[in-house]
Image (cartoon, rainbow, N blue to C red):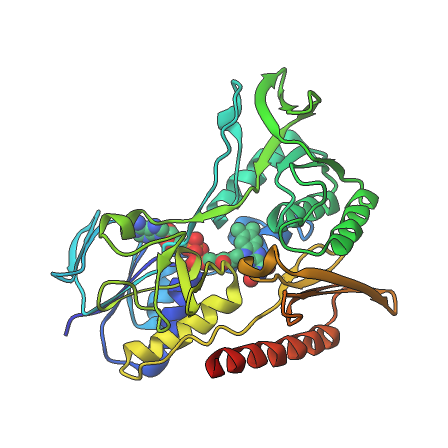
Length: 400
Ligand SMILES: Cc1cc2nc3c(=O)[nH]c(=O)nc-3n(C[C@H](O)[C@H](O)[C@H](O)COP(=O)(O)OP(=O)(O)OC[C@H]3O[C@@H](n4cnc5c(N)ncnc54)[C@H](O)[C@@H]3O)c2cc1C
């Protein structure tokens, strides 16, 4: 019997493997991964400093333990270089493997800004537990109060800023937008977060961007577009991730911003599925989205596992809040979809010292929200309202 092969041992690959094994205990299962195959929860990477966690403490299971738990072969340190979806073969650094069904879960790659200067190559990014280990070791070399300049005040940049400040480091957060979290949150919440980060001692350099990074003495100097210069020990880039399309494009699978999958998670090639940060999900006609968060990959994993075991199942991607792990100003967000962002509007109000922002599209339908300080009860209420309005839109669309 030919195996199910999963490429990638991140949360997407391993969650799919677990869901598959719940339904099928017989079909051979192979996970091929370029990394060491250790299981860890990636969201912990941006709130581990304040808890003084070492990288090794974040890995809860080794590849050997995962292989045992999943009754699978986990092939580590092995890059997949090609997919022949007609012959159903993958080409890897360890040779060729035939498959019955294939799942691509190769994640995303950090976006690299074009920056000048003799230390531009020193910029770090953290998208894997191994990156976190390297980052920690650079911080340790810099001392107990390391100076860290973070490029990007989005979700990950703000989380790292708060976490590093909580661990006693001197943080500067740099972003071209006028407010932190500008792409995801309502201005009222971004302002609240800005005030909280400043109160935490974080320096915000907003409305500008880094154009060069040079060595200066034992440290680095970041030159900003507005002419200012910042001395720092470490530069961390958190400007975003881009789905890794290299394998999919080489195999001539359909791609847009991510690997395009249909409602069941299947790519343009038969018996090849994709999920996680590399995928672009289909939510409806003309509505495909990259959803680089945990909740969607879990929903996708459950549905794809059922489809792979013979019960064709659509991925039911309901809105799920993103919890922003900034203890100085805890937020929950369901960002409005991109296609309504420019035509809708935010409505903000304060209830019992809580800022609640609702986004209405041009039909006055609730399409997203944000709340701070976030709390499960309020979050659930807002989510229920969003669910009702989404259902209303769906049925209206079906009726039309
Ligand atoms: C710092 C940080 C904090 C986050 N916090 C949150 C949060 O609070 N809440 C939330 O919902 N989301 C959060 N996210 C996003 C979430 O963690 C990701 O959406 C999720 O972990 C992506 O998992 P993945 O398996 O798709 O990708 P990855 O974890 O990137 O896994 C990709 C896997 O593919 C392997 N691979 C890649 N190419 C090849 C190849 N050619 N051959 C073989 N193997 C290959 C890699 O080695 C790796 O094992 C955070 C992300 C980051 C970076």
